[in-house]
Length: 504
Image (cartoon, rainbow, N blue to C red; front, top):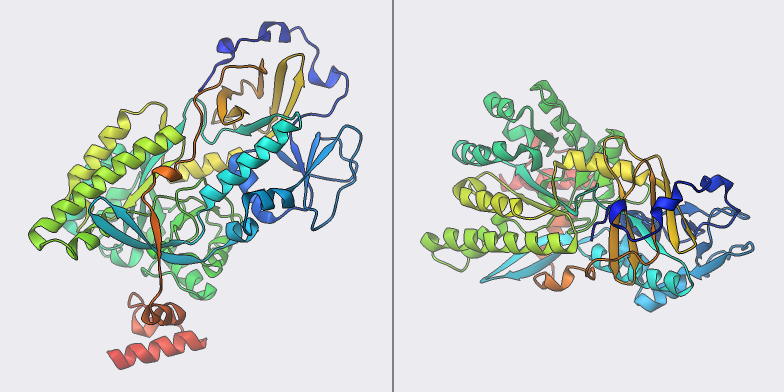
């Protein structure tokens, strides 16, 4: 539920005659939460959620509530302060939730989508589901202690979700490219193009057609390497090739959706603003990986190409394409509807080579359907990255007085209109910050219960790696890199080059 200040039943009119907050009797604000020595994974989750937080300093009076980990150092509390042990939170959620949230490994999983069983290599941890469990339990603990729960809304006011379709240009197919661009050009405000340079630099007319739209890098060769130096060479070469064609790429999407710390190190050294790999996270809010300045923007990992692969192994060739396209379309429409209702980002992706261009009705119908939904921010991933980075800098204080809540925000971005989500239990009201302030009644009307979307997702089933798959991953096996360009300064590269020479 989104409210304007005029709609909130409170004594807001009287607030203008009140003294400024600094002139009120000194009391501890309900927010921000003060965060002592806690697992980094929890800090990332709190930042994703937008919960106002500040590092705890002994003697700090910046907030009423302190989060700490009893397995580490217990903080010294001041008068009126209360602490919450996040190790107790871990025990309530169960398992080693901190390790699961910090897990950056990927695994092979399958989804049953209509008649098709599609497979993809994605993050092993369902970060969004874990974060929802953690935040729900922590919110209940804070509210039970007499505190309030508030977060900076994930989308600028008045939006309740965001939509983007990411197009990964792995290969160039003239017919498919033209058919895909004929639709994408009409929706340039919510389409992001990530271009593999090696397959496109020979087609200058193609790159010229992409000018003026959001274009990011998809590397030079279509491979994500295990080695940091190889990734640095590949990513920088891809960026330089696009720049030479008159396109300054914004952001990066790794080939095959793979992620590793070697890739992240390369992106950091090149000052890349954002990246998107479902090998690290999928269907989640954006976040900065621990110790990194590169924003990760997760997307939904199922695409038309996976459906085509699955249909090809089950249906006759003359029928497989139509089945795959219809299954993918129904899946996208359902996910868009459910994600919109759950206030989650609606971020999909696909490829124009022998896929999207063959079935242009898929994109047309998806864009038309999204256009019928209320409160959707049609946005490029580059613009969304700018918003999310600005959102992370907003500082919020919240005070509760005389049946009202007063919110003061600093460092609000100029080009966006931030809002706060005020929670009671599992219901929330969204209130815009007008000039960095909001005043509303503690009993302000709230919207419908907000539920995680995971129950509506197709069931994900883990697939075991075969020995051949494990060996290929271990050797970083691929055919995208020309034989003469395989790096040989480490044993893995030397082994791969030798085996490629033998197979040739």
